[in-house]
Amino acid sequence: MTGVLRFFDVHTTGELLWVLFGFMAQGLFMMRFLVQWIASERAKRSVVPVAFWYFSLAGGLTLLAYAIHRRDPVFMVGQALGTVIYLRNLWLIHAERHRG
Image (cartoon, rainbow, N blue to C red; front, side):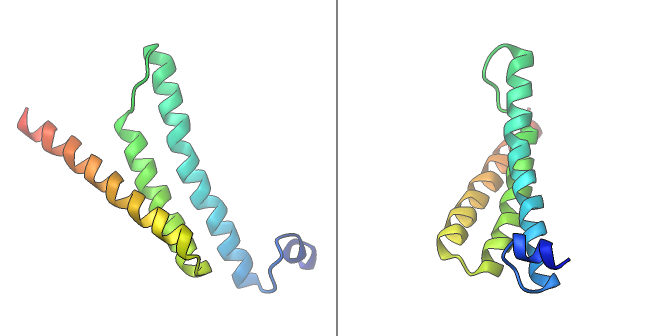
């Protein structure tokens, strides 16, 4: 375990768990690009599926939690603003579906 802690430059198991949480959050965030790419390839044009916004929101919120834990104000502001945008897009999508 000491080698893993040293590799990630952390000193406790708790810090290591946060680093692993950060990787998981980044994985969620990355999935949005994969979902969008696959949907565009299938459609043979650029499309943004609804799943893109859900992965954006999930990844953004978990990355925001990680940024808050790390006390990184640049990272916090970026993820907080993104989260508002992802929520707004989902709101618009669902409102449009209910209208028509």
